[in-house]
Image (cartoon, rainbow, N blue to C red; front, side, top):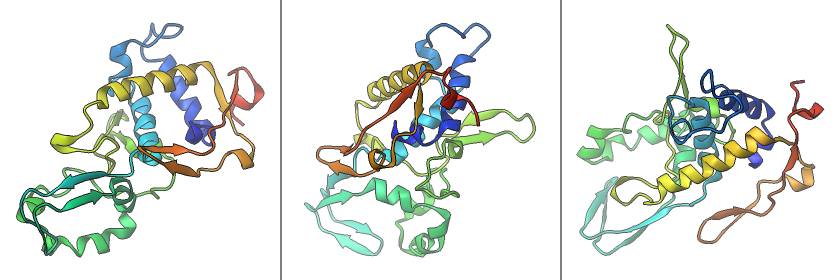
Length: 225
């Protein structure tokens, strides 16, 4: 929620979408289908994706090789424990690092060269900024806004066959939490000494300061300046 306290315009845009899912949605709770549908709530989906991208809840994942593996010109023996720092890797997958990242292309395995980035592009805006709009694609002809899950690199639940099996449940809980708070309160800025982004790491990453200042949406601070 810390990212939302620092982005009042995002809170207002999110609330507007949640209140206007359809002509009959205002004043009633969101349905399961509305909450889990990127087509019906694209900005909501973008906000959640951006929070997960920046939070880096899990610093990485581990694998053990069962046979020798060729990786960027190096042979990794069987039985080697590997740690993949997915959060750091995704942060570095931006346009500023393109030249350095492309320098490895000639050393990539044939499969990696064929599949490329899986339809994803390098982030064009700074990866340390909270910008849900980076996940939104706008149709130049119709102006329609849609959520693009492959807008860039972000794997908060891992990927492939061994991705987190609890992803769908975790996403539902997170969406209920964010939507409920957003519809009920405007999260005002907290004093600077209580709003650092320092975090600790155990099984997962957690904030060392988790303070919010909820205000009713009728308060002056909730109104656009």
